[in-house]
Every structure is written in structure tokens, then in C-alpha cells.
Image 1: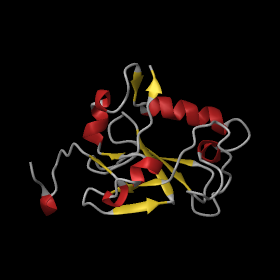
Image 2: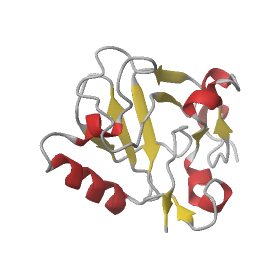
Image 3: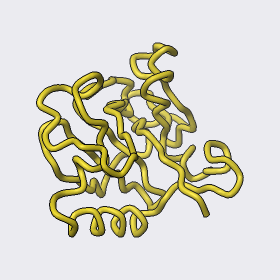
Image 4: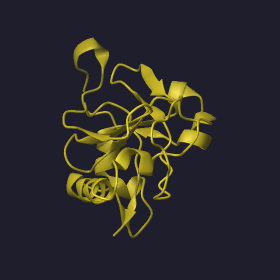
Length: 154
């Protein structure tokens, strides 16, 4: 089904940043929300895409322990993240990388600046940013956007 500007209303795709397959080697794929709903297509058996409550619990636990969660989740240094990569310690071993995002209109943005992770809860996404030690919860991410995914054990 096609909507405004010729865009599919329910896209079910994954993308490589800038449509360059080599970008998936470092940053992984960017998935639309309909793919996330079918987590069995992207998560191994016994794993799932975390919902907003699971992300929030992790963020709250990390934030209550001397500092904000953003830096504890991000890869340290500037090999992939833009400088200054504020507060990045990767003390959790999560090693979030700034894979950017793809808009519903096909524009790629924020490689090196931001990491966007889908939750399995409606259209909520999590954002980590290179110059903030916080985690942003986005509550209205368009289903056609391409964001990263992290799977967790059931």
C-alpha cells in the first residue's frame, strides 16, 4: 500500500547505512518497525527485542549508579563516535555504535552522531548521542524509519 510521497505505509525492510553493504559489518542493519514486530526474523531462538519496560529498567539501574546510562552503554573513544563522545566508558560491555538512522523517505542521517534502537513497544525507540551522557526515549518514531536492534535473552 502506498501513502504520501510514494512511501509504503507498512514497509518491512532492513537497510545498510547509505545503502552500502560494508556499513553493516561495523554498524549492523537498520530495521523498520514491521520487521521488529516479527522478531523471530532478526533474533535467534530464545532471544527477543526488548520492550520499553525492559529498556527503562536497564536505563534506570544504570543511571542510579553514579552517572547517566548513555556513557555506560556507548563504545568508548572516537574510532566510530564523533568527538567528544561525552562520558563514554562502555562499562556495561554493551558497546553501542552510532549507526544512525534512515528516514521513512529514504534519507540516512546521524552516522557517527547517534545510535537509535527500536523497542518492541509500539513506536518507541532509544537514542544515544555523542555529546550527551543520557539516554533519550523517543515515543513517536515512524514505523518506516530504520533503526538498530539489540536482542536480549528470554
